[in-house]
Image 1 (cartoon, rainbow, N blue to C red):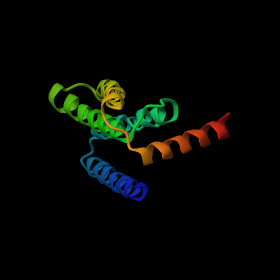
Image 2 (image 1 turned 90 degrees about the horizontal axis):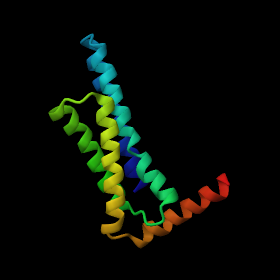
Image 3 (image 1 turned 135 degrees about the vertical axis):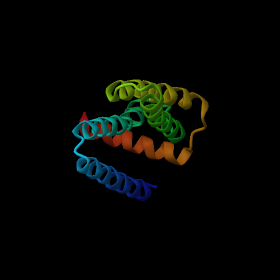
Length: 130
């Protein structure tokens, strides 16, 4: 539900802020910049399902969730195991998110209620922006 998404968002902001504060106490500005870049890369992943909901008529929530999970997991794996710089991690993971989102829309089942809600949002967007 939307209430749960907002709640998760609040906790994520709190966690990232606390992490930045701890990093600031260690006087490691490089870590703060790296953490900020990784956080921004993670936030950018919301763009894929948002654009998909607005412009791709076959999009569904299951594919959006799968894409987000794959993208965020990719950021972590590329950074921790491959040692890539944060910008490269974000760009590659965004590509993976997009591919999983598109494939998921073709494979995973769609929920009729969320599809109707999606169409209402899309129509409201077109009405307000065009």
